[in-house]
Figure 1: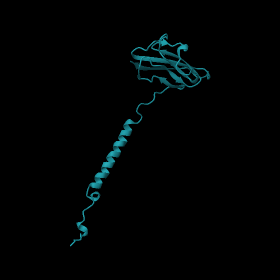
Figure 2: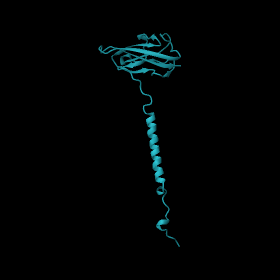
Figure 3: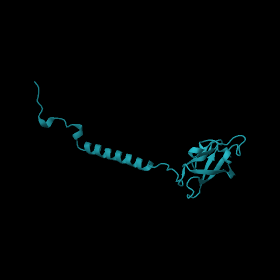
Figure 4: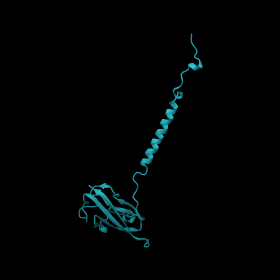
Length: 150
């Protein structure tokens, strides 16, 4: 003999029990708020340095930690030439060997027989003075940056 259950004897599905749907909704809202907070805290991370017009990038980047044989220099827009000084020593144009000068790349790699054989350990600073070669109406600009060598 089987007994038929009446409508009131049926177990309530877990999702419809009092407080379950509210707890799930609150949990989803807290998780979404956590994701939004993480995105907000990490957005923008390290911003690119503000370079003067005509300068696209420098190597090493300001504040970087690099080996003492690392190249130092800059990438300029076409139509510029530069004078590079590293730790107070002006680099001769003939020693700007790494990079393609025709594409605006001017890099100095320290080495034997060069004006600087290796960068000193610790804080090093570089300075460039860029001069226009095409648009003679444009003004020269100077950019200085420092990095750490080990």
